[in-house]
Image (cartoon, rainbow, N blue to C red):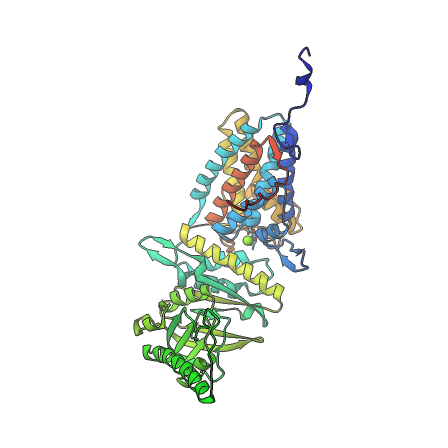
Length: 538
Ligand code: ADP
Ligand code: MG
């Protein structure tokens, strides 16, 4: 070094608090962190998977085997591990089910990639190979899938029960499966050959008490509300429903007003005046022909009294989202000003009924003619059971909807992954060099699903996998594992059915994240930034 002393000084291009890891160690760190996420949920996969108990900072307990719920509750911080959590979240948004599968596949892709890294295959070559493999995988999956239509009640119900098998709600899986199919069909909108499905239109309410078998589907809405006045009717047939987004009250004056009253008669006339104004409001409701009122704001005591006298059912402070759902289900228009309320704004429902479940009062708005919104009231002996039943039902609903929307299903129990793996191996044989190694690694990674299903069921994975492979080689594409007997079965015939989209989404997002993590060779952890100071004067 002949330069002057200055060049010997370390040069800082980033704040001193920044931590940086580069090259191989950055890569291995990331892979390890991501694989740990996969390992964390692996034991929960499949009907024989175990549950996890997660206790949060407030001491609240969640017992679940739902991949995305576990990962969300774990509050993962490592940046690469967080990317794995994102896979589960995408899967949850797109379908609802298959979150564990997606994360486990991604973990295995990285594990296999590590072995190639050890053999000095460059990460970008692995990433490229994974990309090729995943494109081919989607093609293969599409080809091997079976067709399904919205009228295949039997297959759709099986897709729903497959999602529920092994969850806490399993004992009621037939019932929940049926409900999932009915609920999806009720809100599904068909235009020519395509469907639109909005999961917001199926409201899932949870009520502790009874058992999961008491879960019911209501073709309409269930509100956590009761009539505001005890002498209002508890049951209204042929309901004409007004939805009001304004208070049925006399507003307080905005500025403090002082009214000087000099003798008691003035006081009386002041109160009479108020009474008359409220009476006018109620008259407007009566005139529209409504016999049921849902108000997003408050209803004054005196107005309540007048409404009750007219035999009108009224509930107040209804949530905005419930108002919207009511509007969809009954066809009512939300009115912001009582002066505008007319007969045309009213919606219809066969029955509005107030009921008590457990110690809570609920209002059912049901038998709507064309309920674009339905409610499932999930029951469970304890809060934790009801919660897990709700998660299982959400998965089932997602699977039924995805099956109808993409019109294709595959069989589960590890069969589709095994078949995909087999066909990818064949494809890899036609490639050459290092790319071939990567595609083979990808194909091998998919075996993690049947292997894990077997392991979680307490079987010897090597035996089961060998037997399964033999079945696939002899052309049985739906050969999967019966996790209850340990035998190799035809998963399609046995009714272990999943929407094609679970698999295509899981494979493509797992592959994308694996590629992304492989391409990173520099991790820069910025120091915690201080919140910028707001300048006073702008
Ligand atoms: P995920 O979050 O990925 O949906 P699950 O714990 O729900 O995880 O497990 C799904 C896996 O269990 C799928 O591979 C599915 O095919 C398999 N599976 C579901 N029911 C059965 C069954 N009756 N026999 C064998 N495998 C099953
Ligand atoms: Mg599932």
